[in-house]
Length: 153
Length: 153
Length: 153
Length: 153
Image 1 (cartoon, rainbow over the protein chains, first blue to last red):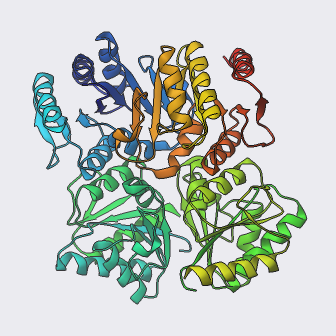
Image 2: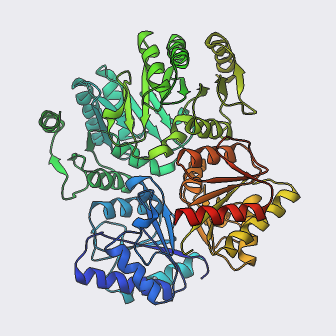
């Protein structure tokens, strides 16, 4: 599963259970051999990156600003865009699969964008949007991702 | 109310009642002296532009492709971006107010983006998203817009 | 020549002769019935807009920031993008023809981008780049534009 | 020199000596421990990536289209943007240093953009633009990069 990109999206502020899910999700993605893409900042993004790094993965942070120092410490490849929140379309548009955790309107914009680009979106305790593949655990997300990648590749 | 921009967003395929609402919305926006911004294509975008032009207004179409000929015939100022659906962030991000009609995931991405940019979003028979100001008629939308512009300017 | 867009690009700081050229260029573009597109800020952009408005034209300012108040006072349609200088690709990519006046690296990036998009670029005392159609006066630019639009439309 | 990004820009068609330079440049960048960023396609981009991979480096390809399969085979991290040539502003805007090899207008747009963002641009047999740091060999480029990174970090 070389060069598979999976995004984790979610709030830059998040409660402890959400951060735990994000870390598990990052680890799961790294365990699959996929590259983790995210918005590069704090909260869900940071925890997902931490999880991926602990599991030996590679992390990409597509940042809104011009300064790569804004990336969380677990980002391997910071991409400072200077595009502001328009960078959301890159986070949601570049990966093969998007995994959505709890987040606010920015997360919603990414879900909408990913769906309009016909990307599979796996939702875990996030916005209830038709078209999102709902799962209840990271384990169930992993199973879905494996199915999707088999069908797709 | 000079140089006020109001976006109308919604599906490029739409049923007759929705198209009628879009045309009314366009006319209402032109009647307020505001500039209508939209994605420049068919469906809700086209009907909103038609309504605005009938009412003597000005219309801007921010297009996904590079070819301005894709704009509907009621667009005064076509802006071909070549950005694909990333142009949604411009449609939702440049105006003072966003008015959302029925649409699919593209519309959802615009609602999410506008909310994350702290833009007022007025929703008429569209996605039920917290933070959207829900109205039931174009008349009610007009009233809301007048209030918002008074508070804002 | 309905809905023809012509961009004027050049420095946001400029000397008096350049500003005079920009104003003439704006007036010429408006006189042709075309819509003036620019980056919306000061210097060449402002003078071009002033010229276009004096001549009864329509002006579009595609702004780097999110705040339309940054537009010069002669911009009819401000498009705040929040894209930073990435908005240069819209200024150079959306019009039918680009007219380049003296400017710095931003202007250079726009010339390069317009040429890579196969847009005609008319240069007046600007960067000496192969592919740019060089002219010495606004009058000569006008003649070139008329030729280009005849061939193109 | 962790998480230093250096872009190599240049034509997607290139002659054999240029491709050789690109491969050397990629190897040099990887040798410095920096991440290679490029536009992800053929020509200079592909040779730079090949060089970086042979030297054990990491490569990022920021693609104009939506399909990551367009990336050359030496790209580790493909970022399909769907932005068309507007992606040039990301290639030129995200790295710490831009190294320019021979190329056409797209390369010129990237040089202009990088300079307008105050990025150091090292030029090797490329466009003769004021502000570009001209070098004659990859070895000389390496020396310059080391100086720049010392001053910068």
